[in-house]
Image (cartoon, rainbow, N blue to C red; front, side, top):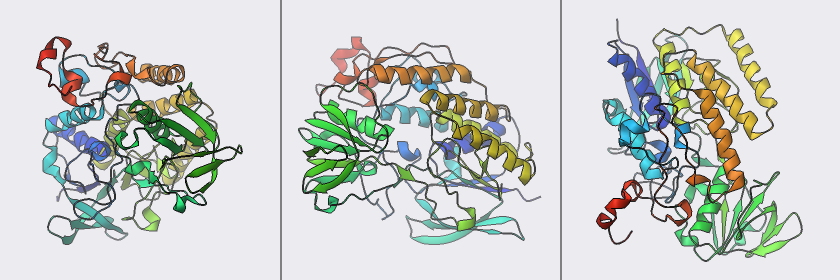
Length: 458
């Protein structure tokens, strides 16, 4: 019989997890379906594939990534560690719990480079449109090969949407912002804190991106950082030079006015107002419509589109867990696609979705969120042979991370944690995070006794 064909849109951590899941099966001596992954960037990694560009890329496509210089992990690496490829496997020595972006990207690539994943991926290829034929039960995907400007189509039995949801900015309007004379951007286009040195910066939003960009700008020499929140402040103990104010009401030239009646002048405004789930290549009846939350509606097990389970979404949740959650999802999705995991009826799937949505509605605190997503991960792990890890211990690390941030927003990255995969205790970084202004892999990995070998610029 003709092999089933599986299409994957996106070669970021979720898409790579799906490829890895099939390769794990292949390594067990089993035959796998034909897999084709389409990636609109020139390399894998999704958000972790840093580009200095903003706006549009080499071929005129909207820039996908929101990554920036000096980004360090804002959660312990031990909470995202691959169960089948540890940090010890990759680096051959203990490293600290909060690595910078180039180090994490190197880790992501390490696992996939050991495989034949690149053979499955067509880079510089973007999905333009998807349709589903009820008679043949197949998807048709219309694609553009950006390098040679060629449009073509392919048919698939299953389609995995792994294109992420931190790429299309949610850009609010405030009266008078069009007359603001300084820089006004969304966090999606933030590429580093250097340009804001000596400036007074206003960040609108109270998300992780507002928190991290604000701290990065403070660290790299901004004169002041003000965070403006809609409903609740982030509420940590901010150092001198960072503060929170209620939401902006309007702008007059370079002056922002706030709901508490105060006003201040600013040199730059950064909208840290989140992202929209956007799938312009999908028709209305196949498109996931949700806001950023821990359990999107219409996805059975957070993965299978309930109206058409052949359509699979990976990584669409708001995230505490990341890489290992994508793996757990991908392993379950793989088992469904090869017939190993049978889905219940649509009505029973709906009951299961509603059960999770009801739990989600009752969440109140960050600790509640962690427990909820931990339970979700455990549910996924019970459905496949993805190598198990101690989810409860990871959950406790997340809770300690939340405490650490409240106690010291500038120092929590100096803390260390123990791997639940290998038992290795993280090393202390050779330099305190606030004093470390170089995020290169070379600087990060050097040993203190090697100091004479470090370039003068360090």
